[in-house]
Amino acid sequence: MDRIYLDANATTPVLPEVVDAMRPFWTETFGNPSSAHHSGQRTRSAIEHARASVAKLLNCTAKEIVFTSGGTESDNLALSGVLQPFIDKRQPAHVITTQIEHHAILYTAQALRSRNVDITYLAPTRAGLIDPDAFEAALRPDTELVSIMLANNETGAVQPVGKLARIAKAYNPAILVHTDAVQAAAKLPLDLSGALKNVDILSISGHKMYAPQGTGILFIRKDVHLAPLFHGGPQERQRRAGTENVPGIVALGRAAELALAWLNSDAPQQLAALRDRLEQGLLAAIPNTHINGPSGTQATHRAPNTTNLRFDSVDAEALLIALDMQGISASFGAACQSGATEPSHVLLAMGLTPAEARSSLRLSLSRLTTADEIDRALDIIPAAVARLRSLA
Ligand code: PLP
Image (cartoon, protein in one colour):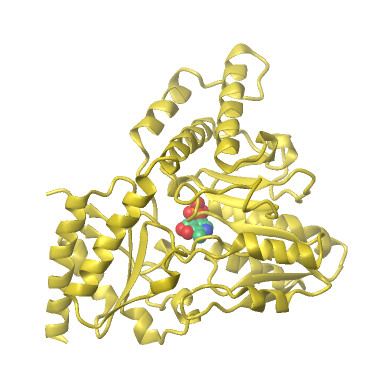
């Protein structure tokens, strides 16, 4: 029987349409996009077509899109790109971020801190949400950058980034606002001319939106200058040196087109309904189970594909191994943390005890998850939890 993949927040499969779009760019149309000859110009125009598709998904201009190697590079370029000039000039600078960011942000912030950048880490509420009043209170005259994620990779909690950006700009229009939208892209509408019009910089990873691993996007609003991370050629309008990953960029463009069509259909509601069926089914079948993240009246503040559940007195690591053996791929947090015994920094920041965090499991559905898979998971997971509890 086929495996049940419930770890789409770690990575998504590459869609067949995306693979088809990429294929010619390895073997047939493989020119260097910086070459003046015909082959080069064909790949150049494929890159620009992809850029236009991504811009359409985000409702911004194509010139504002930079292609990178992934979410981690996009996050590093955003933070270091804004702050490097302050470090170079030995000018004080303050950054506001949160305790629940991905390590691509947290460790970059830590590196900047060691170079005299002052960082405020906002704590979330118990539901994993950032309180706009607490955010406003943290703003300072020397605040240069805000970096707050859109959807959390572990709980799916969706932060009010549009509102926070508006508050920041009202306090000081010169503050730059970055958001890590890696877990929001292709799941939620992202409108950089509407709800997110005060966001200046936005990170996306290809492999969370059905394009390959090692591909990414950084939106940089017109007139915002970032110091580049890489030095070399003039690619990406001097913002990201290095010969472009043409097949990867073509994939991002095709994935963006498919994401737009998906978002404009009723598929997001169907995905949320499938997630709710899994979540409600597990809550009903397994006593002493709790949702980590926005629920009840706050349930809409959550990505449609994610649930993070806590099973009292169950070791999530043992549960993951049991589920894996029965054909279910899941995780207890960020993929890069899986296998580590440290409890999730996100769940701890929300006020869970280390024991509670260690009893928590993340289930994240993909666009390809079927009702049959959810029903099979609803047979397997309660039995696995009951067995672990009986052994404890
Ligand atoms: N930001 C978030 C919220 C993520 O979930 C991830 C990956 O899990 C990243 C950044 C890093 O993206 P990438 O794996 O493309 O480097």
